[in-house]
Length: 263
Image 1 (cartoon, helix red, strand yellow):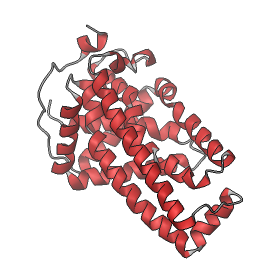
Image 2 (cartoon, rainbow, N blue to C red; image 1 turned 90 degrees about the vertical axis):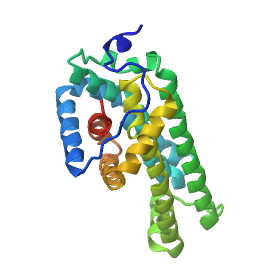
Image 3 (tube, rainbow, N blue to C red; image 1 turned 45 degrees about the vertical axis):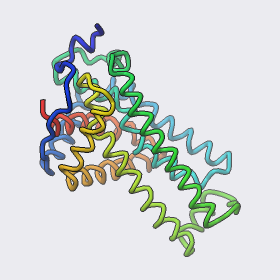
Image 4 (cartoon, rainbow, N blue to C red; image 1 turned 180 degrees about the vertical axis):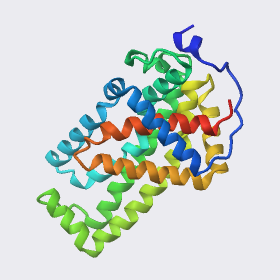
């Protein structure tokens, strides 16, 4: 038995009941996310430092390899795979809520537990969604621009913002990206925190997450817009703001799960 198994408040169980939630629950989750971040800033920064570093790497690769058209799809992919990378944040929030030790070396204990396979299974689903988004985004670019190359990111931005086909790409790209974001949200908003909290299989966790979105469509879509807006704000200063945004969102997602799924 692992330390996580000993500390977990829930034994193996079937799919739990899902509650109806509203905007007040979103405000509660965000406030608790900020509270957790302030209580564990050093540990959290260690856990999520990969985000700003990965952002810089993505931008550098895009510029050097002439993959500028993929820069936005790659950056927006944070919203698709972020829930999986937040595993450590969910565990720290869980441990703080239970009054357990919240030092950073406990953050990834869920990946050592019996639920690790289910966690990776959901992560694989999210990565599949992410790669599908990249393929479609690049296909849209090729359909509009073919093999045309751009001298710099600024030339590409000018082309996109000042031409008809550029605006077509913006509109279609955002519509497609929104659809992929909704799918990722429905799959992960409850499933991954649930797998940290309880010993269930991946299918049960995903079904619970889908049920939560079906029962609370407006609230969950609003949550999706909040997440997207905060991520954009975090990405603007060369992704560095993600070091603040990501931990708050990760902790808030844990508390949203706790408000949504019955104990």
